[in-house]
Image 1 (cartoon, rainbow, N blue to C red):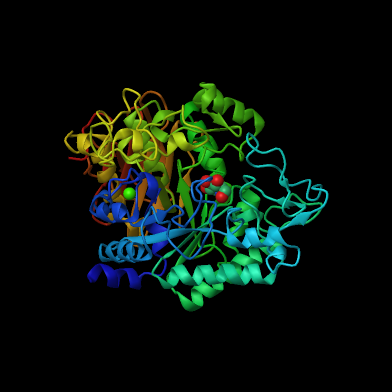
Image 2 (image 1 turned 30 degrees about the vertical axis):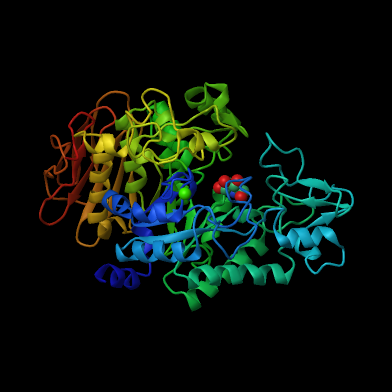
Length: 566
Ligand code: NOJ
Ligand code: CA
């Protein structure tokens, strides 16, 4: 009850929440059919609570032929029968709320499955009221400046439909016809979908493929003004009818276009930080955080009540669309040397696989996104360093069953291994014997245990970390990234060593602080302060968060070998 009241009380909860991305099909199978389901997620809520998760993002749970992992919806008002029922959904939301965990869903506005009755009726007759819900052409030549996104799979955004006797437009797979947002009924229907799910208790939506809703001849058909107008309308409905709910934009765009999705605090409360993400990995490989500083300088601050949504990985390929051609090549050189890792020009690997299974690097990268103003989105399994299966097609290799324990099905299901939704990871070093919840629970200093400690420290300090008087400290050419987070009455200094060896130095804070923070998590103090000068020493891949209040208390540092997190 107390947790529930707390939920209701904090309208800007999303600014300091750890989100956890749950692909329901791959998380936990409750009934032994080999497919993860909603009751399975419900049964793992205590695990998520203990990890420190504040909100779940459920990947699409709706009826779908699953040609694009549910991003091809065939009915917006139901749950896929293999995942459960609407009652199972209600129970999951209620049980999550009981624990103070919020739940957001995936709102897929741009397109539907071609199996959807709307498209089936539209293609069957030019006279169908659904015909104008989609985009048709006799030539397939319009909107030629709209790039093809799934370029390894599709040649054009237009596909000829024999039944319709016309081409239809699709920005993604040809099995996903785009809806026509110039048609008022389409916009009204999507508002109905929004009301339906928020009315059942969802706390918001991650909005899929936001930039592509509106098409205009002669443009690249991305981020056009009417797109913003539509989402402002969605937001207005949410504010008026479901206060306290939030919208997160998936807009893989340039910095200039991405920041526009915050609107004037009247559009998305959160926007995924696509421009920063690949730069985090490049910085790590280069041993220099310089590029991170540059991106942050041009993307902070954000409007009041808004927040960046940072992420390291998700269920898609690691997109390189927001870095230059040259940087893309460097990135592939560092992280994509196996040619099977490349899809659509980007990298289909998991966090732990990219970082060579190096726990200190995984922790430090996670701590970077937690230390920035905004919220962090974690991808399921990254907290235990799960690997991937490159032999699976498209992005399936990063969507394998969650590894709960050692064994042939990793404790994901009681079905025989060959009946699982996808095969379990087998690479030595990433298989369940090495990387699973139960195995890591039993190991002092394991990645899972240290992740928990990190999230606990984050959750205990959100009052400071929600402060937007954020000042990145400039350390010139130093391999150390530093953020100074001044909060009400206290401040936090975050330091991260990107070098491949130890790094020492001195930095000047924007204000004088009390000396010598005390380390709490583990290890020796990593910095001492004298007035506004701070001297620091960090080992390889070491990071520290130190609090400088009136009374001196530090949150501690996480040294790779220190066995933190017990
Ligand atoms: C983005 C989603 O994250 C991805 O998985 C999907 O394939 C496309 N949008 C199309 O919905
Ligand atoms: Ca099942």
